[in-house]
Structures are given as C-alpha cells and as structure tokens.
Length: 450
Ligand code: S3P
Image 1: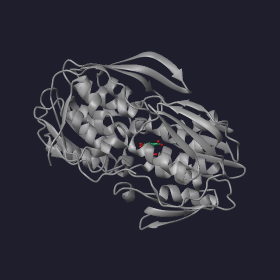
Image 2: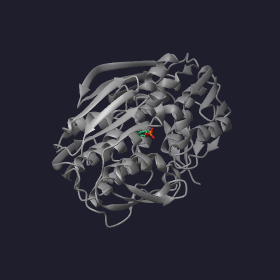
Image 3: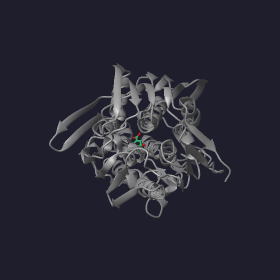
Image 4: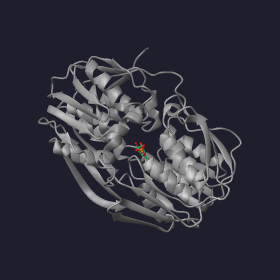
C-alpha cells in the first residue's frame, strides 16, 4: 500500500550541465497491464523491466487478492501465475490502489464481469477522482457500483453474474475507460465493441492481441472501432517492459533547459500514442535525436539523446496531439517557461482530473516562480521568458501528484533561484529512482527540513 504519511520537501538548484546515461524505469501503463493480463491467464507470465513504483506494486497486491500468484524475483523480474478469464476469486479485504487511477480503473474493469464483489479505495488524490466514467459503461454489462457522492471512491462493485457484451463509445479521450471496458468484455460472451473518437494509448489492444485474444481495430468515420471476442483462453506471455517515455520526459526536459547538457536515455518506448511530447519539443526547437529505432515486444523503441537547446520558441500545441502527451503537459509547461514567446495548450480538459488538477497546480507554481500563465477550462498558455530569465525561488505544492513534484524539480535546475516542492514523496508512485538518477547526471536535488 502506498504511504504518503510523511511529506518530503525537496529543493532543486542550478548545478551545471547534466551529462551521462539516464536509465529510467519501466513503463507504468505496460507494467499495470502485464500484471493484470498475467492474472487473467492460466499459467505463468514472465515480466522483465517491471516498474517497481508504488502504483504498480499496489496493482500486484490487488492481483494477489483476486487469487493470482505474483512473485518478485528481483531486479524488475516478476512472474504471475494467473487464474484465467472469469477466474478471479472474491477478495477478502478492501483493495487499496493508493494513488493510481490506472490501477483502480483497469482492475474494476477486469473484475466487473465475474460473480464477485470487491471494494476499492485509494489515497486522498484517488478518492477525489471521478469513477462514473468507468462505472457507467460497466453498468451496461450488468455490474453494480455503490460509491460516495459524485461517483467517488471508496466504492463497491458487484460483478455481473450473467454479463452481456456491450457496444460503447468512449465519451472522453481516456485509455483507462477504453481499457476497463475491454477488460470487462473479456468475460462477457459475444463481441464487445469500444469506439474512440480520438486515439488514446493502445497498449491494452496490443497486449490483448499478444496474449491471444481475438481483437480487431478498424479506423472508420465513427472513429477507432475496437472489437473483442469475449471468453478467450489467454496464453501466458514473456513480456519485456520498455522504459517509460513519460518518465524519460523529466531527464530529457531537464537536459533541454540546462546549459551544456547532453543526456542519453536508452530503450524508450516510442509508441506513437505516447510520443507527442518529443514531437512538440522538436517543434519548439529542442535538440533531440532518436538513435537505434527498433521494435521490442510489439512496441517501437529507441535511444533518445537530448542536448541543451538555447533557442526554444513557444508554439501552439495541436489539440489533436493532446492524448499522446497527456501526462507530459506539466513538464512541457516548465520547458515553455524557458522558451521565447507563448506556448498555447488547447483541448486539455482531462488535465483537470488527473492525480491533481494539473493546470491549476502548475499555474500556481509557475506564477510563484515569476512566469505568466493564463488558463481556461480546457486550455492554458505559458508566456516564456527565455533562457536565464526565469526567476524561480518559490516553494510550491505538489498536491499528491508525482508529475507536479518532478516538473518543479526539473524547473529548479535552470531557474535563477532554487525551486522547492512541499512534498516529493509522490514521486515514488512512478519514478522511485528519480533523485538518484538525476544526481548521477549532475543535478542537485536535496531533501530539506519542513
Ligand atoms: C493511462 C491513461 C491515461 C494516463 C495515465 C495512464 C493508462 O489516463 O493519464 O497516466 O495507462 O491507461 P486517462 O485514461 O485518464 O487519459
């Protein structure tokens, strides 16, 4: 279970160039899915490079509670002995998903069409996030849900005894919603169809195919139509988890804004549904190169080199790119502060319902650091000050959000005065080696007293 009991304030200050190799952890999205799909096969799935962050560890614990045998062999090597589609046992205790929206939403989908009842909870951040987006489509299968006001956790789900397949158009661009419906569709007879108007990360589709499910994807005028045939026998797999592009974003952006830097980030997953940040950085004039482009375990992978980029320009980020970089806007807004001109980010309403309201959290911290931010319900604009001109010197709130904490630590590497976050402990949810890795590159991030 994740503990955010003791806040860990952290300060980041400019400390010369960042250089060397940044081996970032495994992909969070693929790590969750590896454990869940492994639990839905009879037999042993081998996973290497699993992200051992709190979010994924909570999912591992949950899979054990539903009856799978999940074993940590050390160094990111894990095995899952699953129970098969429809084989989940009823958990004896409340499932605590900590900080993880992905964990809870995917697990709810995976149990929703089994005749069992489970109660879910999380930390203060997760218990404030909307779950109706999951329970509404699950109700179509016959699943019942009772939660707090506004569809919040803690929440109990009563799985459908005789699930029916559904046809569902996802109303918000969300891979978690799409994935929950597909995972629920696994144990419904017949064909479950999910339609998304905007493409979101497609790891669930790729991995379900890899595990042997009959799943097709068609691009139509209606959008992406995903058709899954229910009640397959999934086959255990050997999974090599690529390194997380969303974690790579932090050392990459740090190198771009820190004079003299040259950082290599090897083995980064570059699935096009995830790589929008890197295109955006290149559009802004960042010095990024992709080396050794290759395919590993069904995902495109490359080694990414990022160098200090003195001539960054603010740009309008195309709204249709938002889904492919949704977790990267906090750190993009930091890079935008060091660019010349305005970076305009539109079509990003979803940022308001992440681990925090990320537009609000970043706007408050950037303004405290001397950067102008304008915002509306689904857009925000950062007016960059150019290299060397960003004052910094602020203490900002990380609001139980790992990406907010890391974004401000990156910012402090290039501001005039250090940046402090009130609590860096949420970083452990997705990037437990962040401080050590950044220190090895030459950054100065220190834990400070209260
Ligand atoms: C994720 C989907 C995204 C993303 C999250 C991981 C996933 O959330 O923000 O960090 O693994 O499916 P939404 O589905 O809410 O967009």
